[in-house]
Amino acid sequence: MADAIQDTDELSQNCVEPDDLEIDDVSQLSVDLDILPPGIEVPVRDSSSTYHTPIPKAIGPGEPCILGVDEAGRGPVLGAMVYALSYCLKSYSEKLPSFGFADSKQLTHATRMSLFSRMCNSVRSADDCQLFDNVGWATRIMTARDISSGMLRSQTGRVYNLNEQAHDATMALISQVLANGVNVTEIYVDTVGPPAPYQAKLSRYFPGIKVIVTKKADSLFPIVSVASICAKVTRDISLKYRDESDGTWGSGYPSDGKTTKWLKDSLDPIFGWGPVVRFSWQTSKDLLEKNKAAIKVDWDDQEKTDIRLSAFQSSGYWFGNLVTSEF
Image (tube, rainbow, N blue to C red; front, side, top):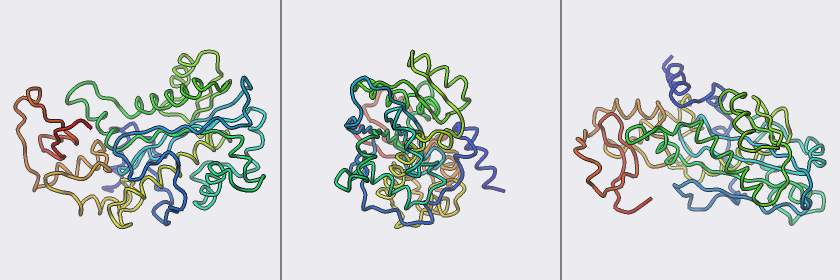
């Protein structure tokens, strides 16, 4: 019952869809670290980052391409949310199903890793190079710290909610592909919020390009399935490299008992947690505010101090680090 109430809070407070709170299989497997997605830097950064592959050699100047967008990690309280896009020649997109692309949550971890490695690695057989030579992709890793910083901005300015952050990440990724000279004629996006207004927003932002925004786009359009795999693999491996629990913190979802246990057991009465935790999630807020050992801080005049806050204030309690340099 407590988990159900907690999940409802996440839906209402964080613009999270019910499907985003479903626990996937990452907690039941050992994430393969033999493959390091090129969008991840080790040690993993606390600031958000973007990666674009070079334009595949099969895509010539002016040739019409289709592009798909999806994300991974929207619902978890731990780790980054990753937005990804993929693109290829419109004529090549018909071949994608033959490789086994589908909604990343419906594929096994081994299948996801195999497909992703073939997209990253050109030093293989001619058959294995097909995806590398024909499909381009990009990722935007939105860290837990940056997500929460925007969502908790209501204490210092207009809140930057999760949907707005997702929309901006999507538009920035697509804009860069267009700026690189790729002739994108069709865009397919797995929706964030209601599909119709989001589709209208993207159509205004990218005039002259056919835009389709719909639920379950990763199951309907193979090019979105490709993006889904890029996002999922990048998210899983990024979280694995940030693991502060020796493998015990579960999937990172609020309804995962392993995750909530780790959050409770590792909560510091002064600093809360490190930047891998989304302080803006209701799960985190509840644990922070119910912590009887929390130290209350009176904020006199924040504008007169040069101190930068590297974490967040919650209900009058201080959870975070004080630093004297910029992020």
